[in-house]
Each structure stands twice: as C-alpha cells, then as structure tokens.
Image (cartoon, helix red, strand yellow):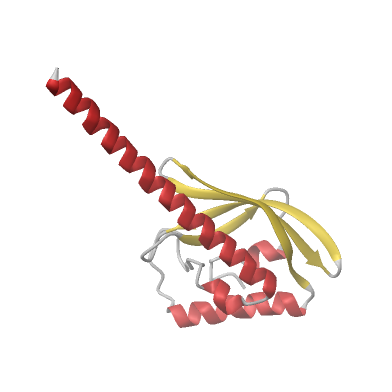
Length: 158
C-alpha cells in the first residue's frame, strides 16, 4: 500500500511540475508576443526586434547573419513600410498555446494600408535558435500581404 501511495504521489508531483513548467512557458511567450505587438504598434521597431528570432537559411538552422546586420535589415523593412503608410494599427484576440511541445499562437491584426484598415487573422510561429523562444514568423490566413513578409524573421526577404 505504501509503494502504491508513493508512486501516486510521485506521479502527481511529476505531472504537476510538467504542467507548471509549460504554463510558465505559455505565460512568458504570451508576454513576449504582447510586448512585440505593442512595440510594433507604437513604431518602436528597435524594441520590437528583441522579440524576433531571425533566420537566413532555414528556420531551424543557426543564422550566419550577425545580430546587428539582421536587426538593421529588419528595422529597414519595417521603417519603409511605415513610410509607405502600411503599419499595424492594433491587434486583438491574442492567444498562445503549446502544440506537441512547441509554442504557437494566433492573433487578429488590423493593418492600415494607405488609410484602409485590413483585418488579418494569422498564426504565430516561434523558434528557439538562441536562448529562449522568440517570434520567427507570422502567417496570414487569407493573403500574402507585404506586411507579412516585412515582419518575418527571415532576413533574406527583400
């Protein structure tokens, strides 16, 4: 009876620890994505880039491009879009969850495109090429919008 009780308690502790850890991961990733979108919305692209996991070959291969060079490329793309009157006006319905051990997310973006507001539902993909999960890409559900390409962590996109 004591062995059974010990096994049951050990199981509960292990499962509880796993759930607590994954819950903490979700909260950290949610906060990171929320901060990312808040900074993009305000036009603070330099602060927003801290939440981007950039890549230049495959999205699962450590990049050869330096952090500073990648940052400059990404900032240039986002700044050009803003100058071209295409920018994030607001976002809503942000959710972050774990699917098969990997963080994923969904959000609805409202993008101003020359004064016309476009609603775009998108999925958020993360990667962990550095020390923590960061935003790798946003994939729009219904289009191949220029904003989707610019905000991507892919620094090889022109």
